[in-house]
Length: 311
Image (cartoon, rainbow, N blue to C red; front, side, top):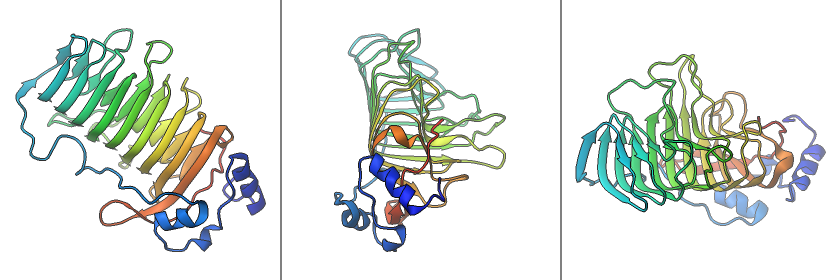
């Protein structure tokens, strides 16, 4: 549909509940906020999180360091200022708070058994690789459902955030906000399907001010920075502020919901900017952007919702 006549594109936009914007050429090389303000009265541009602005504080020192898995079995427990190397943080109780934790070569998992332990809050935390090789079979850095991730950094690992367990694990909704994920091709790559955010049997997902990057290698392509497809039992999305780059399609969505302030880095894709089932999206606001020296959206042009797959 990328080559559809302008009239068809405008009709598609009307079906999504928005008036069509001016033609892309009318924007020229203007800043994102200016383009959106001129065409749709949008608010001023936000600052998207980056590798340097998320995760553990720059001057942070752990109170405790350990190697191997660490289990939390006390409901409502607070785990702070901990460094784990080559091990997982396993959450086996509800209502747990994780704050200022660094995991090198592991993950955070709140479904170690058959059901999620909902109410997990993860703040000011970093998950990155250790010196051990990364694999295409590595588990997601954070999952599975019923959690809030706030000011979290996931960097240089093979999988990012996972949202799942809605039907078979009683997992609750997920909120990811003010966070950054950079997923890269693993050291050992045979059949890699890496994502920044992926839904599989995913509950409702809320995204606020998040940056997702997917780094690939020759013969090791991954999937997408954002992947919430229609054929994996997922629920709805509510997105307001998302910056994505890399992958075959940087933004893949097959489920109903609202997409506002989506920014797709220009020419970062292999096949196209979006793969979306547009007929089920109620609100659509997206732009193709360049990045300035600080990694923030610069010059932009409107990206219509003009696909109908999202698988």
